[in-house]
Image (cartoon, rainbow, N blue to C red; front, side, top):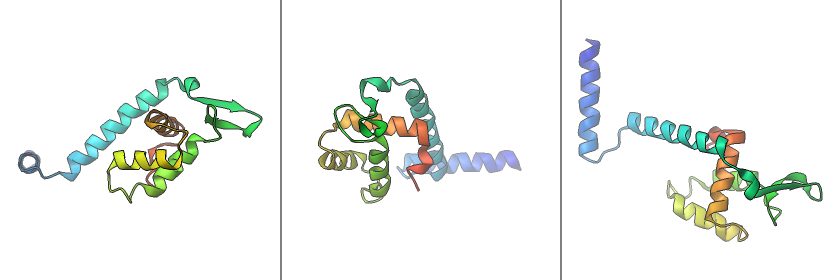
Length: 126
């Protein structure tokens, strides 16, 4: 019985993929695999090239070098606006850069990696 049910689920998922329909189970697994890979990158990334802490700037909180912009500010901005862009990450990143002109796409990604490492992805999707 179990083998038949699993086979039916597999066949249904396979048909949906072939018809360009997204299967929620596959989307879930893909998302978690991506998060796992991003966490590995985030844990091994050298943030010193982009971020600094100085007692004279933002009470010593971590900011992007030469700015007063905290990675957590970018994380919060994205978490607030993520639904507006309905999954269009390119437009969301452009919006971040428009609102934080001292940043570029690379620095936005650094903010995301840093916050993923330190706060976890669930805080982004609150």
